[in-house]
Length: 274
Image (cartoon, rainbow, N blue to C red; front, side, top):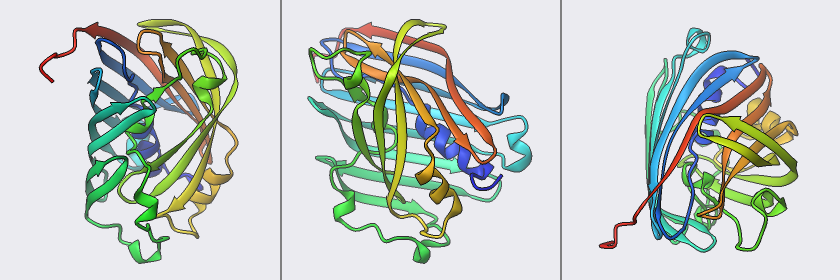
């Protein structure tokens, strides 16, 4: 499945499956189920649950491949992130991710403060670590982890389905690779799924590798040149945020679609003791 091998799809999907909101006077809860498909065929699913309080958040996600994808590489994973919320977005304090496939199990644990990495542990280290672009200390500053990366706030007074919903560049470090995801407004659309029906902002997405990748990697080069990546962001008016509800990515094996089949947002009173 080159230039985007099947074993890379769950990594993309698990990063994309977590949707949450930030801020607001009351705590927000989410329980969402996502289907993963390639060329219209189901290849897996992901489940996200979490809570965002006025100043804190925690998110847990799980995913697994199924069907035809298991014939190539049976993969399952779990990730969690927690931290504080600021006016400009999340400031993560802890991130953990465990991914198991047919070849190995890899665990990543990361501690952060003020959007800078304080400690990171990866077991086992990538076998080709010496062939990868070194990740400098500077590349670990002003970043978020892959789970926290999908908590997106919109400035007050800006349209939740307008350009301000999309236009941003997100600096991400997953413990091994450092990359940017740039979103730009491409228009508006109407989405409908269990739990939500209404307008969404459609964003074009671009991937830029920064460090931790192999410079000779065909899949990395393909994704960096890929102009067929889109994300739909659904508005949460109370928290004044937008969250992904649909993602489509052109890959060398066909179109990968990650779409919410169940997207339930709730509110509860925040814990005043915190």
